[in-house]
Image (tube, rainbow over all chains, first blue to last red; front, side, top):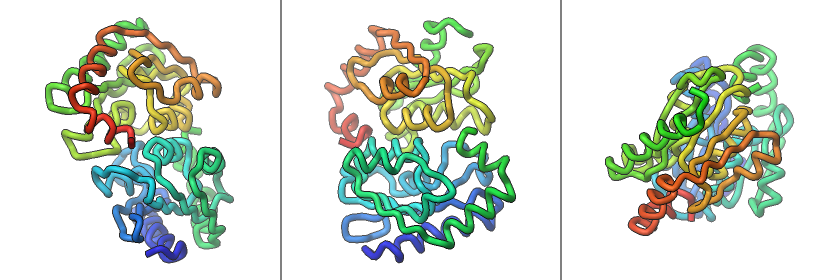
Length: 147
Length: 147
């Protein structure tokens, strides 16, 4: 899978699952150099009472122990926060595909400045899902980003 | 507990436990405003086959869901990598106490530039433990920092 829209569909599916579970609707997936799915996951703050499992960290974790992330692509429904941007930088993930960066801007411009390829899709469904969620549960959203 | 040496002892104990388990010897602990221990943990890459559990993320996770990290202190045996530095920045952890930044330098200067109080203790035991580990298991160490 190398089509960004098809990759985003996997992350969006995770976000929808999270929403259905009462969680924060952010999903992510890590793909290998030939577009193979390595891991997928969603924010698990509510589901597992785990503040360390953002969508990107969950997808990274699900992919298991790997060597060399330069040719991998992290797809996420939302601009990665500093925590998840730090993950991308430390492990040298080569490409980040972002559903939307309108409801929240994390560190994706910082990553671009450090040589990470960044693709922002401006996806309307991702943005609507987050906008609705933030309006409905500002408490949970602020907790998740440390505000 | 507000004495940095006493706080470091908790992180160092975690690092030693990790080493005894065959893991990467990095430990961390999160303390509250009155010096109360909120969570402690160690790198779990080897033990749990989990690349997402660095010492700082493990301590953060163990502390559970909290609101407002500004008055908390993260103590870690080693300079936090970009992943863990991103965690500190996103959640606004106010103070990071670092055992040593000699065997590895992560993002602690970047954090200082963003208003995080940074204390580097130059602890000889932390540095010796990492130096010995890196010499003995460069493969594991490089895997853990994405090299």
